[in-house]
Amino acid sequence: MAIHVREARDSDDAEAGELRVRAYAKRYAEKMPGVFVPAWRWDDLRDIAGSRRISTVLVAEENARLVGTLSLYRPGAEDNESWLPNAADLRYLAVLPEAMGRGVGGALVEAAEALAREWRCTHVCLHVREEALAGLGPFYEARGYLRDTAGDFTIPDSPVHLLAFRKPL
Image (tube, rainbow, N blue to C red):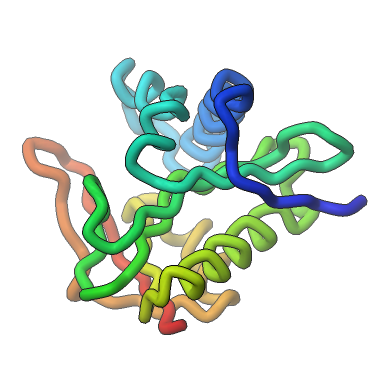
């Protein structure tokens, strides 16, 4: 089945938000069992309209159904967590559990990289929660992302430590 990636529209907000919640709930349960997820995090994941205000949200469709999404932040954008100059920040990659293993995540990442090239970025940066590194690190490394400890950080007033990856464009 063909995967089509496009920019999210207002009409996608509710469906894409629930998709993110379902994907992250599965990821948390499998890759980080026992990690407490506060209510504000689920609200943040559902807020696609808020994400679209400060980033470009891409969605993947398969047979006219949303199966994945991610956000890409321009250099200098509000909430861009890139540590390199002129770098886009890839965030919120989410694939419906039943669509995993069909290339949806890879198609979204490729589309985000193409968009970053259009923006004339030199890199795409991203972060992986430390507890999820074993599951997500190989996915990004297989796509040319390199670990870069210079971008690692801990969220203030939180035990959450994020590990940085970058890909030169």
